[in-house]
Image 1 (cartoon, helix red, strand yellow):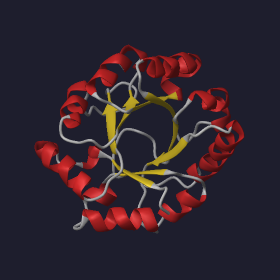
Image 2 (tube, rainbow, N blue to C red):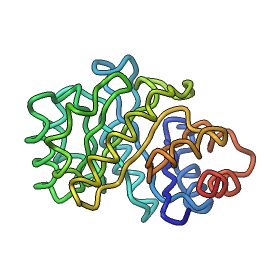
Image 3 (cartoon, rainbow, N blue to C red):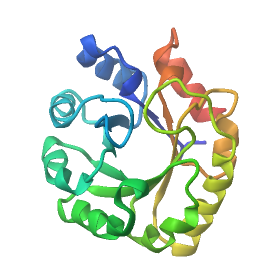
Length: 218
């Protein structure tokens, strides 16, 4: 599947040698670098912020996908755009009725925008904003920590969102994030995913090039 993109999540990287990790991902054939930004409020974990994205930008030409798991993401859109994010994705659950205006703010900052839904959110909730999006991310775990087990009900959400994308007739990427490995990657592709986020599966592999190739082709 040549059109499948693999986006390793640096949440699973060794933060003490992040520069080496980014170069390793690029050399191993990653398509996108997925940056999980967590604030300890929207999710029960704190990761990194604008400076990390800015520093990574200096090391790679790969697209940076800033997944904002934070409250009031609209307050930080411009900073992440200036730091070099190519995509900024925000949660429906954090934005609710503000979602359309936050997505527009991301677009106005010159960056591709996306919305994210948690495993227990009905995809119908985002139907109205689908045409605004460049990417839609379906979570297959509850956000907060890497290494969690894939939630199979996410496959239904993927199928529903894929139908919305096709109905919109827009060129929108469908991304999946959480617990993706070689055992379930073909299921998420069959359900319509174009972008596969993988953390532990990539970073725990002895040969990252091989695992990225297998995730793309399985």
